[in-house]
Length: 246
Image 1 (cartoon, rainbow, N blue to C red):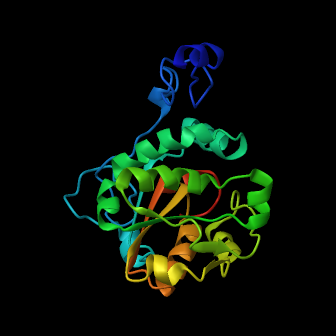
Image 2 (image 1 turned 90 degrees about the vertical axis):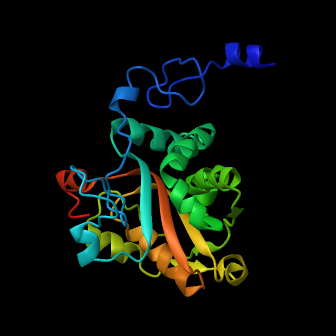
């Protein structure tokens, strides 16, 4: 059955839709443009350093402004190729990309997953969920939970107000936009109480959204919250785009 399916629906590159030999692989044009995030990085925020400063080094920003979450990691930098992959997943219903993207997230998230017991995706407001038909963060979180043998708890967090899109907002605007936007459901006490949570999202920019989620999860009884995203906007890229400071 695979051969007819391959002939009718040949695998395409997630970045540009060129034909490739295997599903979930990038073509020779897109692969060099994808920036995989590697150590050395800040042990708290996961932002890479330009030089290796030794094990366990924390950035000056993380020391001066400790985040609500405990640790954050992302698989790739939010460059043009990664942006197209995220947009294909989110806006073009390419949910078949999610398991492949989650596999790349596993590469950088193994140490976080080893310490966590339950996986929670950043939720969509029900209005946006009905319009889109799925939550891209949940599509990434589900295979991560399955591969890591962790509990998948997509109903723990709820977005109780329809926040505006974060794209184009500066840091202070983003924080204001998501303030009070999330609440823990009644089953949260059972699902996450006295457990460490892996919070999953597609893109990490300033951390305003995941910080609001992490604050809600900790208030509901989580002992800690680590963040794992597919892509992240690096500090210099965020400033160059005119969005403020990360």
